[in-house]
Image (cartoon, rainbow, N blue to C red; front, side, top):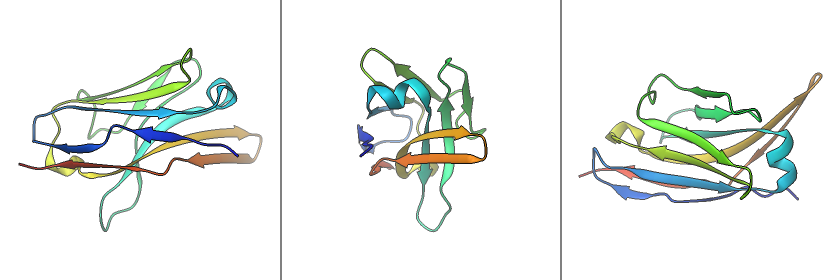
Length: 119
């Protein structure tokens, strides 16, 4: 069974920083595109950022310049460094692994970690 294990959420004041981590198996890291999604109360889950095997990254406009996604293949761990946090960043953040082969998409999700930005 595929496991994506997240950590690093918490409560932070506006303008503060947090770093989320997502640990996965070596197989997942070698073949899957990895990403972070978030879901705020009453809203749909949205892509925050993702990173391909080759290191190409993609960010939502709302987090560009503030968040940085990265991966450490030696540790099979992905990170999301979040700086200049705003109250609107408050959400449950989910680690995601996705692979598209032909017409088949395989997706795995972590359990989610709460990020709350509040004074």
